[in-house]
Length: 108
Image (cartoon, rainbow, N blue to C red):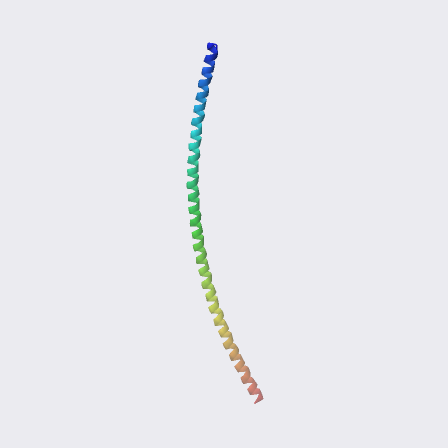
């Protein structure tokens, strides 16, 4: 083999070894970046889950408060209806008593 060809092949071999080393270095860098991105993603996902749980807890508390308020209002309405029903019954009893008294006056 000619010394020029050996020189060219040696240079080409050295270039290939250098490129392979560069490729390995890039691969390691990409792998490290992916690992960092996965870790960051997991942290963000955990934070989002925690925030979501807090929002759910707040919504449940607000719902319970609203439900208690509605229950109180319904209880008040039930009391008012009971009072009104009692008043109507008393009024109806008084009206029936007056009507009966008027009928006895007419007959007598």
